[in-house]
Image (cartoon, rainbow, N blue to C red; front, top):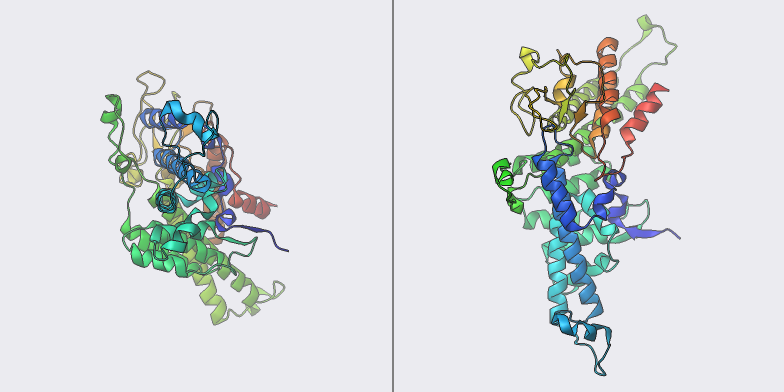
Length: 443
């Protein structure tokens, strides 16, 4: 018989979000998030992702406490001196029990917190819930038994519903997500989830449409007020930067790349045999349209990967040979989340050192910034999906038949950046499907 597991365990890139952040005490994780935000640029880890992890941990931990209490049916809101009663110590009477209504309210609140976590980042939230108590898996279903129209419960149950392993496309209906989207038309996260599910069903164009609509609704968010942190303050959740826009761009880029690869397969299946002389080759209408689609969607994928990479920064480090002035054509690039210019300077290690700071996307522009040789002082802003995005750009260039010299430059830059991409002590090293695909191409 097939293994029955929660639907969210099928999600791609789950391994990219594993790391110590799942076990660190919440106060330590919060301290690290603010330290990272206040660090000199380029910040070690993307602040938007880091703050999302912090909020996800908080929501999941609180939801776990509520779900466990509701499952046990024992009240824990006793004075500190009476906590021994919960264990049945020193009392001949039964422990205080929760009413059915009280247990439902607790499960409903737990479901609301889980919905917030999944809306922040469904991959990270899936990893966090997998590490938590098993009572989380059924909490949304129990709420739906009493409130069938509860949008938060429908959304959470979509992730937690148990289905046969490796049969997500066959055993998943989009109807629950359609209901959530109709109930919450102004939220981009449910559209993102439906798009990811469409990808499993190989409805790539439908997925791209959902992601495009979601991008029209949301933004990076947060007011990025470093002055508050310098005064020792903290930010409210709505003031923190959000990673949703980056998620949508990354997923849409992956979707466009998949469409380009599909059409490349059509080109191979409809073209003349390789042994046919060039002068005798006849390009059919179907092959011509497929070739055109390959270029169209590979360009769109490359554009979205570029916008995604523009959120993160790179510096060649404290080198006397470092170039501080980028090519004039790049000065108008505003894709970075931290700066409206291509290059700026930063203070590092407590010294006033002028370091060139580049949005990573500009390193693949033409003309590209002139960088010194690789060194131990170069660094970048880490994101769990960064390595996959980098190698995916190389696959796009292959599909676009980029000239060998330019492709070689991009390969060298990707290898240089991948070498220093390190998310520790928050993330473990990520496995990259695109990197594996690139390795197969090279072989």
